Image (cartoon, rainbow, N blue to C red):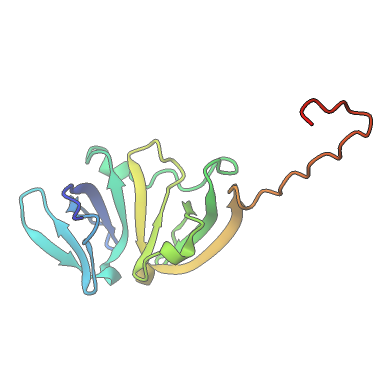
Length: 162
């Protein structure tokens, strides 16, 4: 089933130019680059080597503050891999990557920024834009918690339903 909604994005390029537009979530990642529909209606394909990150935003206001908060104040509450990545230009940022690495795209990573309540809800980081990626921690996950052991039955306990 095809998705009919376009998502608002702001593309941050390595030359610090911000491009705003829409992407189709199911098809915006093309082998030759990112397909961006501008607000005026023109479609452009941006090469992955030019893109620093793609920010899925609520609105295009305050675009200059899009990557303002770059680290978590404390350990993240949301479940996932807590990562620190370094862009080619030396900028550093932390984010959360889903625990299911088999679902990650070969063209890049979709992560949750340190302030998901801010204007940027998610970020797409193309692989050619990254110099380094470190896992800082594994946060939560029901499969990661140790199973609680059942308490042994008390021998003198009355059996109600025998």
